[in-house]
Length: 314
Image 1: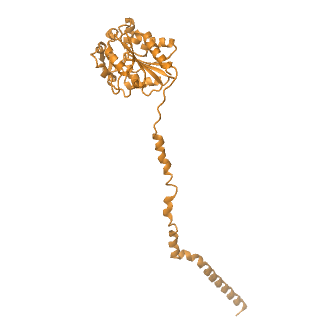
Image 2: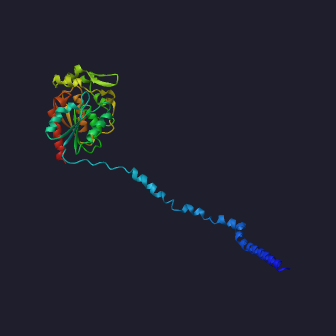
Image 3: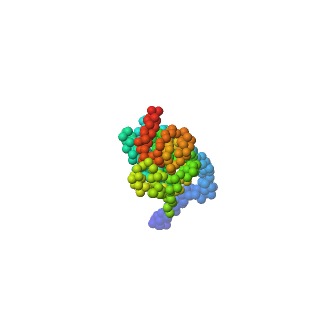
């Protein structure tokens, strides 16, 4: 064989020998991928997976249970205010507005009181209660809450759970018991003249006959004044007289009652029944129903004495 052919044969031999060596070394690395035993063992490795529920996720639920206990805890009742009583809130009745207290306001201001007169819409018990609470919330310190006529129903509801109300003064006012209405109390006596002078309009509001306003509502008020009052009267929703109170302030507040002995709207006998039932300190005044106008000085004196008495007890 020529040297040239011998060299080519040697080169071919070396190539085949390299390929064979490469195949022998590569085969062991590829073999595990082809072995079925190796594939089966891979999924079995995560067999401890059922332990996963034992992770800290379960204890995390414990704080969530504690939240409702804090949210449902009742708030402690607000303690009553202490100190001298220097605030007075006045609540008017039907067929008048807050100006019916003007004489009383002036007298009390002269005595150094901070006085507020509520303007009740007279559209429902709830509306009047809301109006009174708005004014009461503006008072800084202990307050005397005073109601005339229908206003007595309002202050009875408002005073309950009101920490800044030190005491109550009822002026010829209606003072219901729990779930009792104004009509329930008025029915305890024969119909009064003022009640017979009322009429209901198509909207369900009660008006007092202008011609009888003076005689049946304010007989001891100058007639020229009652003409103005009757012209500016504020009607009351008839349904209000049948609405009952859901809480009673006079049960845990000291009370005073101005009993108008010449009243032709709320029977003096019914007034005495209510005053005795609540254990109020009764102050008789020979007045018509509209005592805040005809006897402003006497009404202011009662409020002043009540406030002073409560201040001495502090």
